[in-house]
Length: 326
Image 1 (cartoon, rainbow, N blue to C red):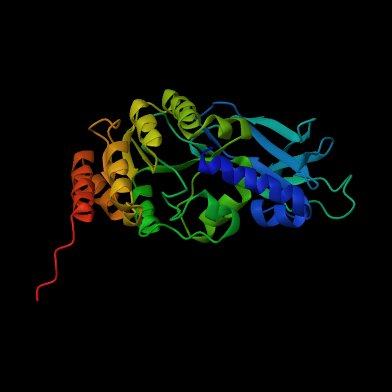
Image 2 (image 1 turned 180 degrees about the vertical axis):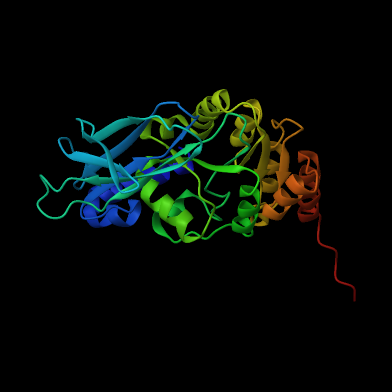
């Protein structure tokens, strides 16, 4: 089982065992409910759906029959009722380029106490030729992996905030993660807390999560690039499957690899071998300052350079220790 799938299974078990308190910690739920929204990316005049999802109880069951109100700029826009899956959706066609922020709130009718607090959904509208930077979260802007998201306080990867802010002056950020949408509130709060540049957060549903990161991201990237195909685009992630998906969909792909020498010589060789499927044009970097140099200074970071370093270090670890000089 993949580590991320195992982590999600652990989260589900904890929620089942510990109830609402655990779900508040793991997913950012409040008052026994998890109220989430989906951001969207649109072309001018293109109709998209604004979706809100209400779940509650110890097993996060869908909550049908609740009224969700969508407002923008202090003005009511539309309302919808949650269906059997707990989802309420309304359509919106942005008239022109811009960031359209909607306040999404639940009517108090039907709640024994106050409903969950309102949340915000972002519809990012840009022309088809807008430059994009599409960025993963775990082990990309987040220093640690998905497991740390569940039970700890993950920190930003070194220099990622500063470099993302510089990139955002030229490219429109989109945060595309294989995390399931259960982690939407926690993910948005983390990006805001650490002052990453604003951009839509696109997450998987449980079905997309179980299909694997590569399949999910390939489908999402294909849709984005089909519509936004006129401008340059960067893709930044930590998995070989991410980099391949970026490359195959016409993005300039950058793969972040941070070798762990505690894995020993065999682990370093395995890591070097894992880079073999990458197209030669993919940039393989070890941190965000190298991404900055590649984008703004024209520096290159071919996979072969890192593979050579990894294999050399593995040979050094395998070499017999020299006897001490008397």
